[in-house]
Image (tube, rainbow, N blue to C red; front, side, top):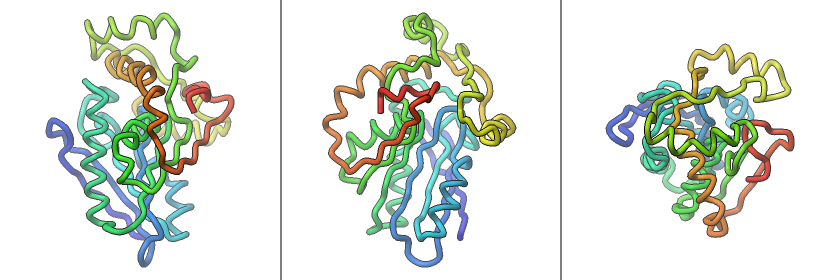
Length: 232
């Protein structure tokens, strides 16, 4: 397989890193991956190693403030910044794959991003795949913190408020260890503004979901402690 890296200018001029893996010959379709909170696109090698040998291309960018992309770690002013970056990235992918089918894949926070984006850009995709998408309130964040998210965000938007529990990522200890030992994974506290914007999406996305008419594959672990299965 062929592996290529690149960068593009995202919202407010930040350098956004991306990479893609291509099969030999023309791909059957393209998987565009939106990764989860605090991680990066390079963590999806299992998906790459499965699909690329079968003839599919896989493209992944590191969201702003994640991985090799610029920006304060796991911080955004507005959720729309993710969507603007994704729109630019999609344009790059479509330029390389003018007639190929493209499926948007979103995991955890990436599932939130993918869902919000697909609702407004359904014509761009042939289908969507959500894995453990963060689409509703989760038990991983205390009700008190959720209630105060907006206030803390307004007063101290960059203040760290919670750390993701790595042990809750998977029952497979090897997966947890790989996450903990990955230097590109952010292990600090998630900023208040990020939390408040995610809470806002949990409140607004459900009423918009009936608009989504694309073929969808939605997967969610019943015991997921980081993203509520109820949202899926």
